[in-house]
Figure (tube, rainbow, N blue to C red):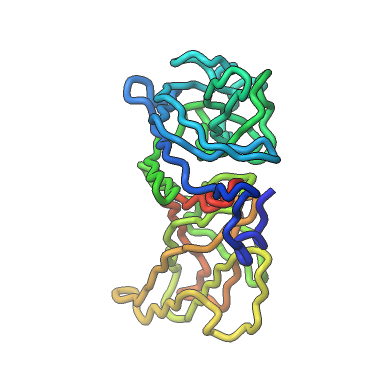
Amino acid sequence: MATLNDFLSAKPFVSQVGLSWGVPEITLSNNVADSANFIDFTAGSAVVSNGTDRITVTGAARTKSLNAFATANNGGSLDTGTKTNSTWYHAYLIYNSTTKEVAHLFSLSATAPTMPSGFTYKRRIGAIQTQSNGVIRPFLHHASRQLFEWITVVYDMVDVDIAVTDTLYTFTVPTGVPVRMLGRNHPGTPTSNGGELFIMMRTPGTVLNTDSLSSYAYLVIPPTAEFRVMASIQVPWITNNAAQLMMRRLGSYGGSAKTHHITHGWEDISILLGA
């Protein structure tokens, strides 16, 4: 399983035969005819592994759903169980070395999907999320960077009082692997004038060397109700496997410590490590 330490000390990962993981050349997207229930996979190649060996395979373009696994186009791709609302599913390219068949698979697991009979090679190539109504959340996927963007941004925080001590907050990015969360944080609604608020966000597991103001992400100084100096920051930090970042605050402004957070998407850097 990929961990934070893998990213902080990552080195090029090359197999014994010199085949690196590379970037999967497969793009995921919501199906145009039925974006709520089907995902399109473009034709493309990826390095897959059985845990010992790695080979490059090429998959045909396919449209797949979260129904039970079948190799046919327009069929299901779920490894086990049934589709669940408000759930992350990881997408894989899989390979049967006996029949030479390439297929696509969805799984709750980011590391150990239940493989269909005969399929022994796999490569994770992305993740999707079902919403509370079961609809697959619309997204854009830029395969060359493994960048996923929400078509409609997600407000993960609206006027949330940030804690004064290190606290984990959860965001709408994949669980099961660390990813680089892409979003924006900005002050919430003050209840009066005056004060200063400093917000700090960082990758869980990293050490805060100092509690000085330089460790915090932005400053808010609202001198009057008519004029408030407010700043916002982009958030490029790496989440833990539970889709969380560490946050804390210092001070307050306008009688408030409230913050908004907008999640735009994520960069799935773990895919580049073969995770």
